[in-house]
Image (cartoon, rainbow, N blue to C red; front, side, top):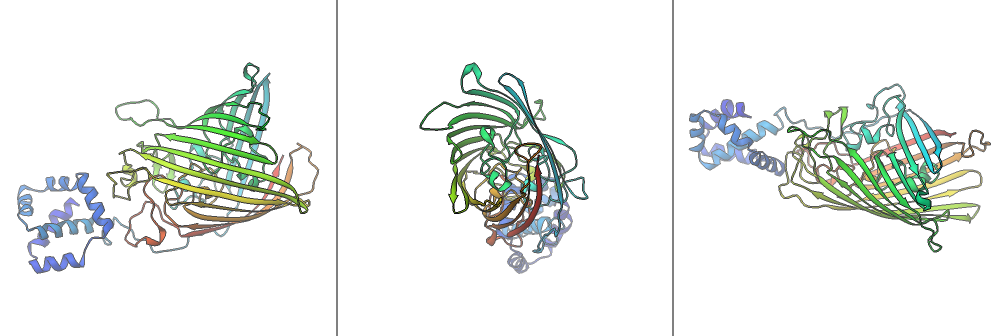
Length: 496
């Protein structure tokens, strides 16, 4: 920008008449976003730095110019920095990204051992890879923040390589002091929670799971739970959960970033076969800008700044009705609320965007809290032939943000969508006798996901959201927005 100012802009202005300057300003007016970017860069002191690099003679010449000439100089500088012909801005025409065939392998081992009286150890090892690949490149792109690269909380939950990673490893001490009290610590069972178990054709996650609408992330942490025996509330329990999403390491003058932690309180007033009801509150403290990832479209990334905190609230229920016609009917509904609490920090690596605030290179200097909401509902009908037919729908508002990057959805975690997702599916279990375990089974599943995005930033807490239909060709964005997406999938799964 400095070179352009001294070698091109000043000489050009020196030969322009007032009429030429007026004509130039009319023909090259900055867009609203460019004006906002210029304001941000000015507040950051960049324009003052450019001026300070000029010779005293050029500084004096600029200061003596009429205001419209000075305005023209700024417009020229801005167009040279982020204009169509600048080389710093790539205007990408609309296109339809697609991968016509993607094959994946997933392998997991569940291990459970009763170590002592009242102490149980559980571990889960997982491998998840795409055919013909030992990296995450087959499913990663520049469209959604949770599919830019693989990181600690999503390892083995999105396709990467053939390494067998430790997805879960925790010990649980139950019946403490002969009371219905338990304590559990380790890498938590905080993925694939209810009600997603219906679509995944898995058993209910038990008292270790978390609602899939709010959290689907492999946390390291601990839980304290209590399950009182109340006749009017069968199966009731409550628990307090803590997890660490990022450890910042040793504090030094060059490392002042804080740890990112999660605190949650869950109350399940009823947990029976016919009915399960849950209520949840979580808070994420010191939310980072980028997780630690390698070989992303942004290069290697790591948390660089804490952007604030987020509260999540959720309430939901799932129920089973037997003997509805020839089969059983499963229903669920879940509601979530997210409330952000941004500080004044912004991510320089993300173009001065904050916690759900600002646009690329357009910082919001008065950040405010954003409230979003989402609903998730579904139905599954189980026939005596072991055929299971299901349908799910979820909707997220403009400012909805969840913490669910580990969901096994190829485009992006569907529960974090700002818009609508529709998903019909059919499961056919094979009528074969279980041998290795009473839960052993084999089944085929065929499904279809349709994403209808209404706003930008699904599953991304960095930067504000924008209505898809209002995006202009000149808008600068960190990630490429999608209007809609389709995913047709089929699986053959064996539980043993």
